[in-house]
Image 1: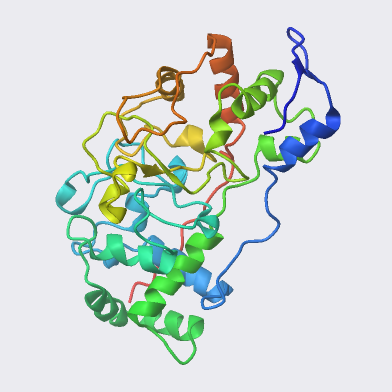
Image 2: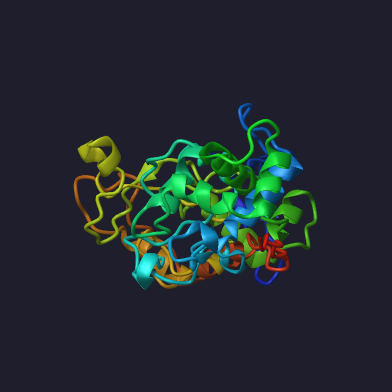
Length: 331
């Protein structure tokens, strides 16, 4: 970690010991210029448009009342403001929904990382009996009865048309193209010194320093894409259910922090209501147990430090970005 000596001028802009050191730290969070798409499912505008329609399509659910957006709403950072997502029959699911933004850079999906890529992940919630409860074969049959979808699949997948595979490829293409918007933090990284407040600047330094947030929340999407038990009081076995390793008990995938202020409540079970409470959890260190991450040590942060961290986290949102609804085929 880059060491920075900071002199904080009360009520003024922070002064840094080295402009080059600060810029190097900022550059570690610079937005990528392109979105990575896999060679076996490259981007086309036809696939992305079709995938968007499917993402909003309730007819992909058993009762025609749930879509991907039921758990991943653009207005709430592509999550929903509930402790637990709501599935088939109006029943709460075991975990809070995750955001679907910036998954083009994810090396695993779901809280426990049981899917390695979006083409695998997409099948899970569609077919899960407690979620959309729609077997993929039935989904092909249902969409195939709609002329608008038959034609859209022919355009997006010449020579293939509508299949289980192409449904998942279209959804994955749209999700990879769903990237968080430009934020005040991004503008500050690019050189606009007035884009964020002095408090947010101090929060950024604390984030990378004494608060130790960047130990796990690193890179432009603020995640190491790894799994950690952060000491939440829970019976959920997390990553252990996938690997069977005791060291993975209660471990969950590190969440990216972009659009974080729109995504309350927090954690895999939605048990922490506010950012203040999240930081309080880290300050205390969480529940002590053998699997708890060794990085979860109590922190010495003042309330001013916490306020600065929250000010910084607010710069990671892009609330003015609007997501137009797609036009879904009627027949």
